[in-house]
Amino acid sequence: MVICCAAVNCSNRQGKGEKRAVSFHRFPLKDSKRLIQWLKAVQRDNWTPTKYSFLCSEHFTKDSFSKRLEDQHRLLKPTAVPSIFHLTEKKRGAGGHGRTRRKDASKATGGVRGHSSAATSRGATGWSPSSSGNPMAKPESRRLKRAALQGEAAPRAAQEAASQEQAQQALERTPGDGLATTVAGSQGKAEVSATDAGDESTTPSIEGGVADKSGISMDDFTPPGSGACKFIGSLHSYSFSSKHTRERPSVPREPIDRKRPKKDVEPSCSGSSLGPDKGLAQSPPGSSLTATPQKPSQSPSAPPADVTPKPATEAVQSQHSDASPMSINEVILSASGACKLIDSLHSYCFSSRQNKSQVCCLREQVEKKNGELKSLRQRVSRSDSQVRKLQEKLDELRRVSVPYPSGLLSPSREPPKMNPVVEPLSWMLGTWLSDPPGAGTYPTLQPFQYLEEVHISHVGQPMLNFSFNSFHPDTRKPMHRECGFIRLKPDTNKVAFVSAQNTGVVEVEEGEVNGQELCIASHSIARISFAKEPHVEQITRKFRLNSEGKLEQTVSMATTTQPMTQHLHVTYKKVTP
Ligand code: HEM
Image (tube, rainbow, N blue to C red; front, top):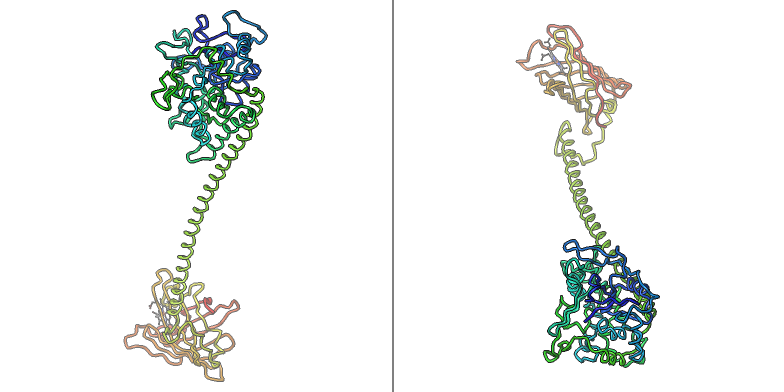
């Protein structure tokens, strides 16, 4: 098979001696947008490119190529668009493959338009081994079509991309490499070697996906398990093929299927190509560009026996049975409109997946917050439990702090009603703490300070209960302690004060209550036999509630060695009701 340039007025073909520096590049059939750019540049009316249509490197600017680093091979950039054409030139010469010659060939075959006509005249560009009606091609063609609709085309495209990448390395070589593009046709094998502009931009990814040079792969838009993109991709193929069918109503269905391998123009925006044409399908995956002729008898699905380009007349005859293809403008308009719509479906599909991803992310956050809330509730519950325990402990302490703790006097009970007899002394009721510390003096002693806690209460009886407990101000060591009762003579202000002290002294003091002041003096004093000396002989006390609501006490005494002298003065603040 000889590869010719499809450009108007260009006679370059593969293997031509003086053109060995020329490389050939397939039309980007799988990139509808870029295909349109190419077709606009080529300016061939009523012509449809196939996968066997090529443009030579002379129609591209120098910057359209990049060099492969490892072997300096020339590669057509994925974005390259041809721009150099000699459209006004009539004919290049007798041996050229200009459009004049194509037109002649077209006329010779009854004016059949399209690439097939051109291919026939040139004998290679539109090479189509099954175009002569090989029955083996038909079922495979249908199978491929079904596969495309079922979203199975992507893996095939990856395989094809890989094989064509290899072919490209073999073909896009400069003369300096001594490996100019050639066509090997010896021993009955026709080896097709060329670069495909559509596939050139693809390389096999590690996972078998197809990644372009920008690093974006098909897998980026087709996540595992996503049937949506595959389905939408198949719509591209369906859209285009149905357009063909609509535009060719007069053509019998069977011949169309049979000739379909020739019409291998399947623009696919999604890249879901049908893969290799049936005419080349006999090649194993990975070598789709190298066709090896085989005999039909090898297997029911065996490829055509002979892939050698057929004589022009035979090929031309095959064209007669084909319908006239619609114009390229119609194809472009139809394909681009459908592709835009389908691409918008891709966008919707992709954004939908993004939304799903965001929903999943938010759901995870909500679950995390719920976990934190549960933890906080547990902590609050534990705190509540601790508060309850502390409350119980406080109640217990309050019970203990009662001057005469008794299980019979439950704190939960309503406090006993105060006996009216002791009402004149009610201002003394309560728990009091020295504030500031009490001051101790006596002629025989160094002045000292002390802390004191006073409880004065009643249990409904006609008397008050009291306890005075003093402590060292620094060490809190208990010091002087005494307790007793205060009684009132009913209907008088006469008061009797009965006290027992830890020093072994017991005493009775009597006096009067006047308002919020109580003055008493010792009536009788007794002591243990081994009481420490000097012994106290007289004691006087004065209690009063001052203007600040504080309770004051002043104690004076006379001992066996000292006259009546003040021994204590202390002010208490009330700490309980
Ligand atoms: C009405 C109650 C009290 C009486 C009758 C009383 C009687 C006495 C007597 C007779 C002495 C001996 C004085 C001397 O050695 O010349 C004394 C000493 C003393 N009293 Fe009191 N006292 C009373 C309350 C207190 C209180 C509430 C405190 C407070 C902590 C206190 C602290 C002292 C101290 C520190 C001494 C000197 C060291 C001692 O002898 O233990 N007294 N008291």
